[in-house]
Length: 299
Ligand code: GRG
Image (cartoon, rainbow, N blue to C red):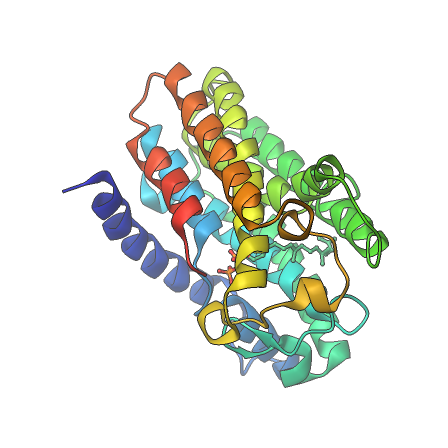
């Protein structure tokens, strides 16, 4: 079995674990307030590649954690991701109608409910880390995980990256500006996935330092490929509206560099991520296969 086949088999299992975990974690759709709970489940369960969850499971299991112990961290990361997608699609942000192959949350449930669904998914992410993790994770490590997650979401992470993104509409940008913005937006959550996977597995801070050098270029590679796909693929393949960056007047790695140079830039980031794995002592074949997937993905 190749490393890529092994990753695919694991990923399928992780996806099933995660869906079942989120189904247990989120309030039932018929529990009041029903519309809010239905909107939360609509946006968070049953779709998406689960790329960030795969990073949590791949990192954690490579460091010796059980898959079960990683469910809370994987779930928390995917809930934050789902929350950020709901808000990103709102009329005041990207104003999009389609997400994960179906109407966006505000199209299906109305804007006010979508805002609240995003807010509530975010807090459940923190609750999962605070309360749901296997008891052997000591309180100090849980606090570190909560700290990582809080920093990731705030004004120096996702929210800040999104603010810079909105400011860039109709403007030109350099590759460095785009990299800074995406390190905060897309990169921060990808980094947090690796950090929470590692922190679930071990107290040892040493592998964490090397994993940061893996995750940072990986996040950038993911975003460069996202920009290329937005400009070159189609809505049916992506499950979200293709060409939105251009329609909204957003500078992207594709518009700044052109397709050939953008692809080369992504590949350089991918090579850097894989090179960072040379410094660690555990089996990194799953993480290396994930980096290769990041470059070849089609949606
Ligand atoms: C976080 C406080 C706070 C507010 C929200 C809206 C927002 C701030 C941030 C936007 C973040 C965002 C939507 C970044 C785009 C990241 C990205 C490339 C998403 C697509 O990820 P995929 O391809 O999607 O993994 P699936 O559907 O497969 O999960």
